[in-house]
Image (tube, rainbow, N blue to C red; front, top):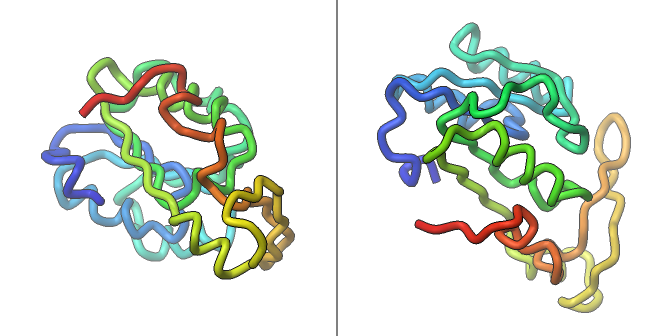
Length: 162
């Protein structure tokens, strides 16, 4: 996925839902300054072990506004395998648009909805919210991630162009 970012030298990049820091660990090698946020203290501790002082890591629940980040302060945003866990996607995508500089990029990846269907059963078109048990509490996740109305470019209020 990071190959899609191209040359990151000199860019400040936000890694939303950075987890254990796998993507955040690769970006500084390309010359990027990285800020990673995640709502899990456990995952952030793994990220700190992996990254040391090569990135700024912050505990933050992505369900809440990114009001601690200035407008137009990032050249790129990585949002890997976490958007499908967010209930208010339009709000998060709007925040990401706000913190991106003009001409900045957003990389988003998500699981394929059939993975949820195969794991949980039921209809491929179900729009129910499922609480997934995780260490430290349940995390809500839509089932599946492709439900109408959750299309990222529609949620952000504009179409994304390559």
